[in-house]
Amino acid sequence: MMARDQDFESEKFPVDVYWMDIGYAKDYEYFTFDPQRFPTNKLDQMNKQIEGHKRRLVAITDPHIAVKDDNFVYNDGVALEESLDHSQIFIHDCKGERFYGDCWPGWSSWIDYLNSDAQEYWQSLYAYDKFKGTTSIYSFWNDMNEPSVFNAEQGTMPLQM
Image (cartoon, rainbow, N blue to C red; front, side, top):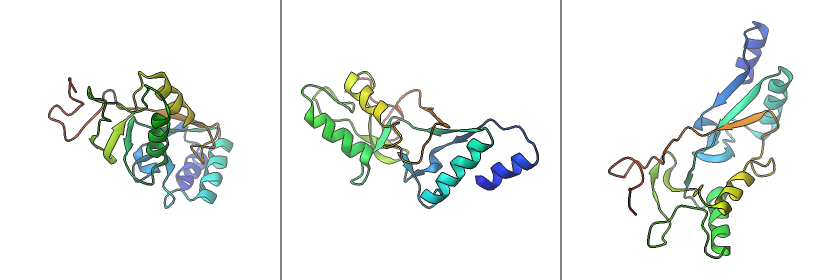
């Protein structure tokens, strides 16, 4: 990205924003940069270069969260959910069980945006100490208008759970 950014700068090609789709994230885990594509030392350098050219970055962060042992977003959300009385961070079915399905990251759970505790948790993930490598030049984008569930008959969550 740094080379492309420098090419645009050298050619005086007008660019305001670079949009980063899921490829920036490690194993489809939002709020983490792929260390192969964005090593920490290069990420800092890239951020400074893009900011110096008065440009911004927009990173995707969708509501389907990879259910993996090493995914801090899922694990912290589960721990928070278990510490709260009668509240939830992830969507649950009518039996009170966490809803799971298949999406871009594989086996996934979805943030329950209608729950204020989930809203606060989701908001906290954008802090620089949580989304390591981001700075004030970052904005964010969610392109999922509905919860896509690849292994569901309708391609989304069941209407009744």
